[in-house]
Structure formats: C-alpha cells, structure tokens
Image 1 (cartoon, rainbow, N blue to C red):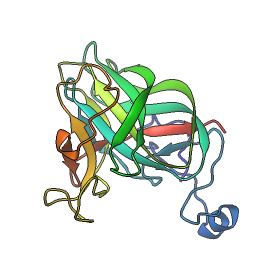
Image 2: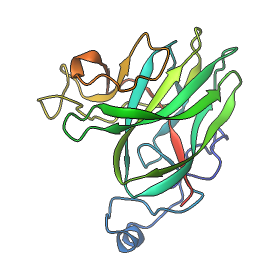
Image 3: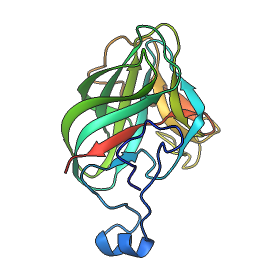
Image 4: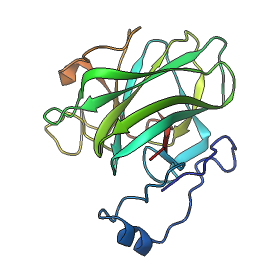
Length: 215
C-alpha cells in the first residue's frame, strides 16, 4: 500500500493509506497491487512491514541486493532509507540492477543513483528519475563505512528462493536477499553464478527500502 509522503516520524513511519480491497480490485487489473499514485511512498513489501524498533547493521563494502517487485510501470523519483543509528563519515551507494529472467540473479550494468549520507540520523533520500517497467528488479546497497551503522529494518525477510532448485529453500532456509563482500565499486556486470553470492535468510533483518512514484 502507499506510504505516507514522509517516513521520518518513528511513530508514523511506514503508515499506510487505507484502501478497500474492492476499490483496489476495481481500479487495477492486478487485484493484489496497490493503487499507483504520484507522490506516494511505497516500501519493498507493499505493506506496513517496517519495524521501528528493529535495525539492520551495515558492513563495510558488503554489497547487498534486495529483490523488489514493482506491480506497475512507473517513473520513480526517490529512494529512501531511515537511519536510527549513524556513523561518522558513513555513506551508502544506491543502485538498481535488472533481474535475469533465466537465473533470477542481478544482471547487466547498474543504474547508479548516487550516495546517501548516513552520518546523521533521520530520513535520507536520493533523487533520481528512473522509468521502471513492471516486474522484478534488484535494489543494491553498498556501504562505504568501516564502522557499522543502523538502518531501519524489516523484521524478518520475505521468503524468496533465489537461484535454488528447491522452490522453498536455499541451503535449507528461505532466502530473501543476496550479498557479496569485499566490494568497493558496483560490479558491471555482477556475478552470473549463484555460488558467487551469500544468502540472506528469512528471519534475518533486512533494511527497509522506500521508493516514491513520480508518475
């Protein structure tokens, strides 16, 4: 569902605009999708999934890929994070990658949307203008800081078995994101084999990612 235009209030973060299911089903071909409204913020689960009391700790040069499903074609003009615990000099580079239709892994050249200063607490955004097609893509986060800082987190990962022969598990547990360590620049292209990535399993906190629809 669409998030409130501001996500920097701890008590109201990720508050959603209530929509009747019948209204959504009538307005959209996909009854599971929320309405696409210019100026609305959304998170990667399309629900009020954030947990203000939970934090995701970054690690220096660990590039994390989070799969996000965009239920409609849209132009996005913001990505956002919320920083409850800052670290001096910390930045996070934000990029998007396509998802391979054959492997489910990140593929192609990154769309680099720049860095976010996370050396202070509060809501942080990066401005962009990206025409995105309906479907899956990867949001990549590359921290530069040597000292871990905290991002508002989703409490538990949404199960998505990425690159597994078993439809439910990867290495014995549902996988909800991927990462590679020791990275200082965005790979172009990223690794094409599943063994090159480390799984982030369901039950592990993930950073809450917000995006705003321009049109």
